[in-house]
Image (cartoon, rainbow, N blue to C red; front, side, top):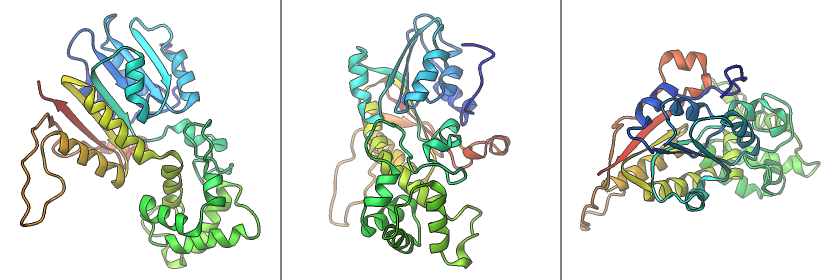
Length: 318
């Protein structure tokens, strides 16, 4: 890795990730399921030798291309694939890997994605409505905003954005579409701002369009479905004493991680009725973070995008 390369993205909770997921043996297989611009993998790989292997996957072609250069001359095996969480099992099969020692999932998006106005992730920069992690997929935020029904948009904003004014915002979008399609991030942000009652526009310290943009991004990229399928695959392919670490950023992601980790560790997540009984499932793992690890105050100050992060780690029993 070149020492003079430009650092495009600050890895969230890098110290905590390295502490919990550092390799314990020679021949470690570390799978970074969202390698992004390589920050976490580079930090972990400082302890690698020639017997170790890094498998990095990401839906973003630009991120994979960057990592091909970043890890081009490393003294260990490095295999990179442009794939999604839901293809994790297939990637491991193609690489001839039955089980892996470490898995890392980072559910956030990277700074280059947000800062590139052409990707359409942020209302802070004027750009086309896109929001696709994988720019080869057909569905974009533009298609969703301009073709989905008012009821569907309401559902998406309410469930994925937890937006209290989901119906008002969806109705405002539908009315706007009768005149002309919504083309840009700023146009959508303005529609949301006008749909929300003035007394609520500056509450909670976030821009009024934040939840709507989050909801669209989650829906367009099927982020929750991808996370669930990816974690299920990782739990099936985790070697004894292996660990899975997950960085999640909002309540919907936190819920999925907690649910799957608890099920794997033998906890009953869904309570049964008073007259129903079920045997406790056998524990296959232990949750090492009884309470999720959070970024320190210094990191939150340096990297505001880390503020909502929670880091959970599971270890498979030997």
